[in-house]
Length: 333
Image 1: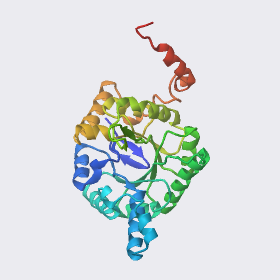
Image 2: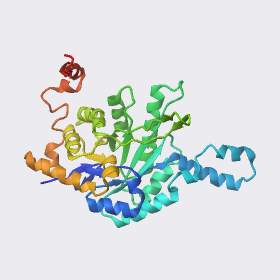
Image 3: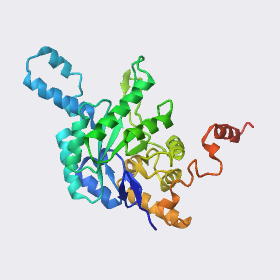
């Protein structure tokens, strides 16, 4: 049984990767993820705000008693709001890269080029085998058009690609008017992988306190439908590798993503819910399913249910939308 896959030019022993989460916040946990069978680990994200805060704090110390700057410093989150700062992040990355044999990838989360280039280079120097760009941007300015948003992504990818030699992945949002065109533009810009899709954590309302509440909900398997669709459509059409994320809780979701065309399948919620050792369950479950259905390799499975390989390619288009609605039979019918 050959479970190997290739992601961004790296050969992995199987396609299940631990995606960015607090679980990768210590060297001990990263070792546990390797022992449980993770084929690679994406570090938790280093946020642009952390880099800005570090730079602003340094300038503040050098220009003490400057009232206007002291006020502007308050715009940034407090240092205590973050678990670790940039230096601690790089230290964990360095020690983890030395302690395990699987690839460790750094993760940068932001919306501009500020600090990304330098810290992408520092991550590479610390031992990162790749960089994942998690571009979290909400265009709340009503004068910002879609083309400007797309261009921001492209410029970030080009800037980071020019600064490092390790492969660069983009964790992509689904909120583009033309996902296919956007993925092609990022592919042309040099992205080595596209991870579909980023989960945006929208705020909730606390009706007792009348405050905006930042509540975190873990994913559910139902959330895989959108990335499953686009991975199946994009398979075989891009140079970049395809990473699947969202809704991976059992080996069934792993199999579906691979058949759609994913090179790797990433999970966080399942590990947060069930513990790090659940990685073993996902890996063994994939192998068991393959044995039961007479598959000898992951490569044999990959893309077998993609748009270009199914008997009815319109199943991924509007025709399937109509069929889905017509297929529903409620009790009132």
